[in-house]
Image (cartoon, rainbow, N blue to C red):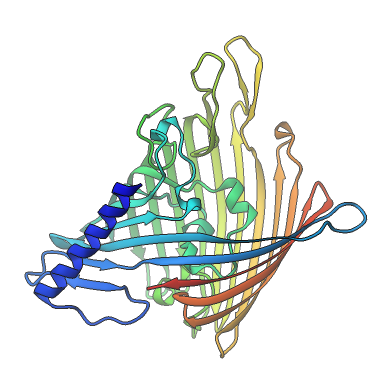
Length: 401
């Protein structure tokens, strides 16, 4: 960790030094702490740190009422992000590092038990008009809620659908294409071939490869300022904007309980259990005049969900098969205060022996400088197995240079 922080400091110091020698580009809050372009236009660097602080109060149901509240505070996310272009403006890159304990968690023998600090390390090459080739570690083209940055959420955190079924980040290549059929009708196709075990794996490939395809239709044209991958209608779209999508992910011989996420399915002889896992997403994003709607459906199915030892005995580990729906709607007032409501339902396959979950969330956000500086709070009520389980109040802020 010491070396990691020293490296980050050294990189920032280098950028400061370069600015001193070449001159600082004009910038403002929310557009990066540092913006530098070489005099010969051969590369650029934008450095944008951000962090989120959260408070929560939780009451567990006890049959006749609620237990005494539990309170807590945490740094939910703290990250350093670098992006720009290298050699040519057609070759872009992104590096994002996580600093908080939540960002660093998840180490295991397959990541050399090291802190899980690298979120993104990817290059993006525009090799022809409307064609991009990505290589490295980054988010797969999965459900829209996951691909929306955690900096651009309209509630304190993502839904249960996302935490149970998303396909997250992986290491591999992606091919992306955009077709403009008319002034207002656009389609986008995204394909990924990846390792299948998530981020920062140093000992792999333990199972098979992972294949992802995502198709997007924008019948009314593109959103303002990439609003299709940002919550809240901060741009107050002057005409209706809609994105409809379908995503299919196949993880061949997957070795984790949640495809590229979850725990490794370890067997008694030290090997890993393998089974094909297929995940499907159907989602939509709509925005118009301060109204924003996001809806998602997810379904996960595995060939053989129960992990079995070589002698035929069950290990007790089961793939998280099931389905979920999530829908949220928000309205942004002209004073940049937004009210949001969300409903989420998770139905696990019977083989998992997990109780179904339902969650209702209402929230309010004040956008001071868009998503770059905002204050948020929400109230969440959760039911597990049809029974009242928990009420939670959460609040926090985002600061993003």
